[in-house]
Amino acid sequence: MKKTHNLEQYVQWFNRLSYFVATQVCKYQKKKMRVRVVEYWIEVGRECFNIGNFNSLMAIIAGLNMSPIARLKKTWSKIHSGKFAILEHQMDPSSNFSSYRSTLKAAMWRSAGATDQRQRIVIPFFSLLVKDLYFLNQGCSNRLPNGHINFEKFWQLAKQVTEFMAWKQVTCPFEKDPKIISLLQHGPILNENALALASFECEPPDNNQEKERCKTLKADSASN
Image (tube, rainbow, N blue to C red; front, side):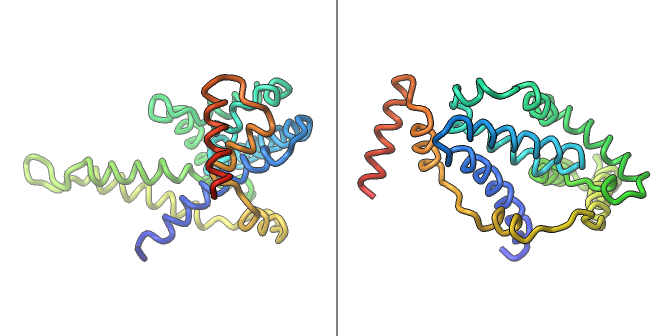
């Protein structure tokens, strides 16, 4: 447990940010306000992309793609979808996240030659980084068929860990706002069922499946 504490914290932060984004959208009954919130988070996502914070970018995309948010057709109809589509493309999981990997390489090159701290920031999509390290470690044998040590495997592992350690050394150049930090870390978030109910209150169910889902959620909520 102790060995994975920091890893678990990172995963929990990713999930919290995703649910925080979704909660912020569903908390407003007025469509106009929901549109503003969605547009705001798209802009935050673009800024994350520009500075190289790919982990938060993916969490924001995940939050906006949650079913309770994605189903808000009247809300999305008022939003310039092109900006969000560009972000989604950059983090597209197809072809083993090829678009993201290309963008990450560009961010690494920028970071390596930068003197400005803002240009040096690289925060990778953490879950994918861990997945890559896991499969590299578990999927490749420590020794080659001839019995020799598989130096290529260990070189690749060392390379990725060294890169990550270098990224950790970058000092955050942005001023920290205690109020924003407190809101992100401790602000209320809705769970999956509460989000679904809030979504139906924002925009009523528009098909039989959604109507049944809404009915079930209300019944469960009343019994608790």
